[in-house]
Length: 433
Ligand SMILES: NC(=O)c1ccc[n+]([C@@H]2O[C@H](COP(=O)([O-])OP(=O)(O)OC[C@H]3O[C@@H](n4cnc5c(N)ncnc54)[C@H](OP(=O)(O)O)[C@@H]3O)[C@@H](O)[C@H]2O)c1
Image (cartoon, rainbow, N blue to C red; front, side):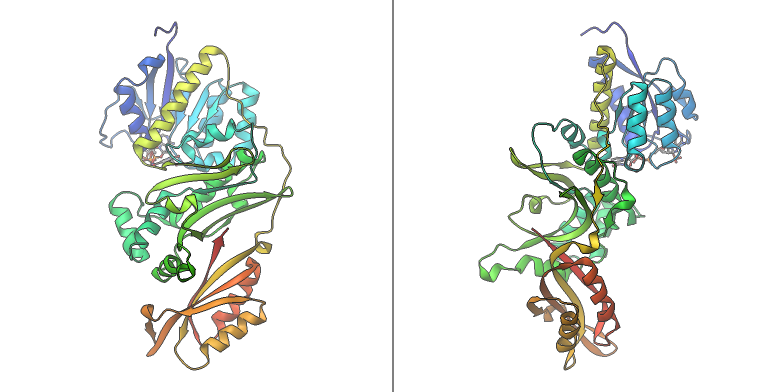
């Protein structure tokens, strides 16, 4: 196909994803779309990279101000100066592609309004779910409705939980994830749930038409999960003919009577739930449409190539938009919703605590839980995971409890921790319905 005018692209951030984008441009991926990569900026020009680029500059402004560049690709990451790069580009009438969840999740309304005011495109497919095309699906989802969206949005956490299902503890699983490049040395953003929280802010804003920021979202990571929990999950309900449970790190948004419930947490999920089979570094997003029923989108959630595919798709679509004089529709995000108080949400759950193996321990903890209104369904001691503390045997005690508010669990845990019969921190897992 011949194009009357070539579209110029400039890239800021020649790191992991930037290298992927440069590499595939150099292999000719832009040619069928009449798109050329003209300039690349990075603060560190000396670092050896697996691909060379002749038009390299240290200054992002060289890319942003170049009149031959119509699409700016921001791949530096973090909130600032990425936000300035995006806004400065849009102010000059340029369309922007970014993979930056930190900046999109925290400034989504400002950025959407700026793109709309300047009649330019802002595309951010790679910011959630790596190569899964979930952003364009959510933006185009107009024929059906759903009241809840749940994702497995962090590949590192999912990879670690998958290894723990095979019997490893958290530290050993993390080490393998780091060796394989699925986890960074500083893993807390992933294992603490904060990366998934940013992504949930983005998809829940799009799904429900309101501007949610990450700091409004209740967030728990996977660092408290132990092999005892995985062992319990595997066996739970099997004696009664069930198929057992998995533990998955879920990011969930649910709209109930114009109240939006938002939370990121590890949960027990029945093995017949579609998200239970999402393993390793894979990401997934799940919802049930009123008309279309359950839908599961899954694929590689990170990594150079998967993320590069989303960035390239955005670039080529925006080039098409420029030629046809259109822009993607961005939602107004003006729906006024109340955020639910997560502390008052009621969930059926599982409590695990290490009990000193001395007479009266079970009675004492049952008394404390009873005082806080826990209605215990079942209780089991897992001798297989017996440890020692101060010369005394410690045995994990697991109770399943009927639905109760998170805030009640927190209060009861304060009292349980004060009991001399309880070793370490008690741990609560929700059952996902
Ligand atoms: N990696 C993934 O699997 C993945 C997946 C999905 C989305 N993303 C997103 O993609 C974006 C890029 O991620 P990445 O993994 O490619 O990060 P990265 O490897 O750290 O690359 C970022 C590059 O930008 C450069 N940079 C930083 N500040 C700059 C500035 N002011 N001007 C010019 N260059 C600057 C950095 O240089 P220095 O090293 O010298 O600071 C680095 O070379 C992030 O928003 C990330 O969240 C990444």
